Length: 260
Image (cartoon, rainbow, N blue to C red; front, side, top):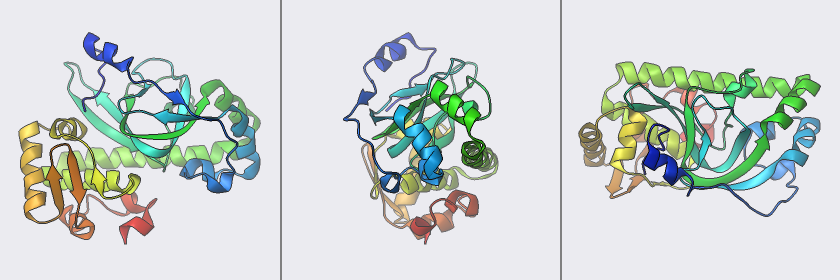
């Protein structure tokens, strides 16, 4: 599973094959919504957004935001995981944030901008709610109470990104890998995570041989079981201990039941 790069013509062509497919519309009660951001809204603010929300399938590699291009829609995942990826000159990439049912895409929009230097695409297929940006902006302008929970999430996402920068700069690759797998595990369903070593290398901003060695070390310690394109979490508590604080209170705050 390789990320879609705006600099690659072939990848751009491939991205057209990964579309967001609308599924049957339904007025789901807020009590049945899984997404943390939508659940945190007041009933009045949820009702304000709901008429413009569309339930969509989020296919693997579906590109939700293109770097430096206007953001037209925001997404609230119910299942699945999106990666926010930064790209250096020369094409080197590294993940700077992940979004699951804990959050939403379009943090730049919440902060008053219309685009981001990063790209966002689906790394684990799922489904969620799509909302046109113009409808979100109109609702925010009409409701001070809507702005507050969105800003709280934007702050949480920025904390996640700053923690990722800290860990990438000071932690060993096996600690970084364990942290990343734990964060994905928090947002996934079940203990199996489907991805390749090459994809992991992009997410960690590391070389593939180093990621392979780190994964073998985790498997040797009995923390995970790795097969081609699949990693199964075996000992979550042991993985948390292995991170030596890289997976800490900030990472666990939204997923306390899963972290005990």
